[in-house]
Length: 210
Length: 210
DNA sequence: GTCTATATTACGATAGAC
DNA sequence: GTCTATCGTAATATAGAC
Image 1 (cartoon, chains in turn red, orange, cyan, yellow):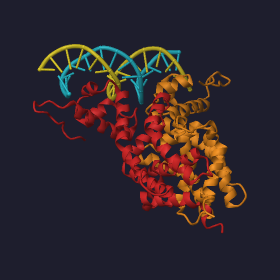
Image 2 (cartoon, rainbow over the protein chains, first blue to last red):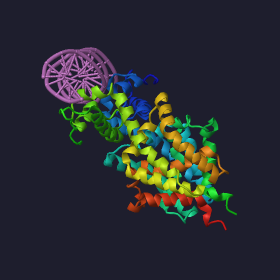
Image 3 (cartoon, rainbow over the protein chains, first blue to last red):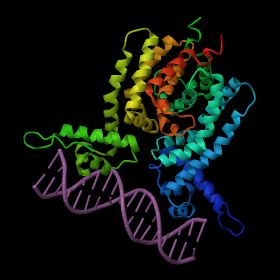
Image 4 (cartoon, each protein chain N blue to C red):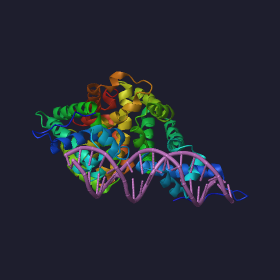
């Protein structure tokens, strides 16, 4: 599941690289099965070491989990936020953001599933820390955009609606395949992004009302 | 956590009632912590029996979990689907559905969280069974409504969008409290329903375009 | 830094008395 | 039907050799 550890000139594994390999394997496992669904044995087997080795790099399972979450989110978020910095009028920037985030979520299923697990966490301290570090920059950026393009709506509700339209279809992707009327093009992120932009722009009454 | 078991005339606990008490306690626990986050000992303690007693009513933990999910969903879904059967034009029925489902999800957090756990399940057989039994009736009903009120959009995408706008804000409710600009009225289901209906009707360009 | 070996606890599940 | 008692396994985590 993982490439062999890098060795230095004396033949010892370099701790920082091993740490990263552990995090990379942990992300995939935790994204698939959640905190309680993954054992330290599972992680160790995926990395290719014994469980005891993990405890040299992380004090316990919870700290490993939190480090893995931070590793994934800190790795991905800058790229997405960069898509917000594009030029153009607010609508163009919003369209760009929707397209970028939709494509990213579609490509990085670990990102999407880990976010789903994180949203189910009931620990207040962890939720607050994660909100401050991960969700807040997104939310603030979109909120200011939303205030520009849709000032007739409550900014919080509108921002949440935009994220809902993007994220929730991927949460349902696994069961949506079994729904009547589902066809594979529905899973293409570009088509979903186009649909969201059109719906946000015009609403359902687009052509029904003169 | 649970009221004492009902006894029959001879003083023996009635099996069907105990079964229901086990299911009720299981729903709350599984909704809070998920399948792997709840032990049979936890359930037994909540019910007020020993773990061994659970195995008289259910063959194993997985069957208990599936029965608990079915118990909750079969208990709630008929009431929601009834809200779809109201009279009026498609828009009035859609508005009614959005209001009913939003209010239900807000009131029944167990329902919302258990749905979130279920969406993370990777087992194809379980997902398909649950889709057929639970999600499909919802989806079909809304799809036909969506086709009536918004035939310029793809029916699958539009239906998914409607569910997204309703469900996702509640998935984020726990972290949303820590976001800047959040105020307690944002948690009122009626206000959220109003926002969703307005957004679906008119889109963001409602007043920006003459 | 990673290993072997193990302590300790928790888990799912069962046998058999009542 | 529920209990007590327990089996076998798997979990987190640590000690100490190398």
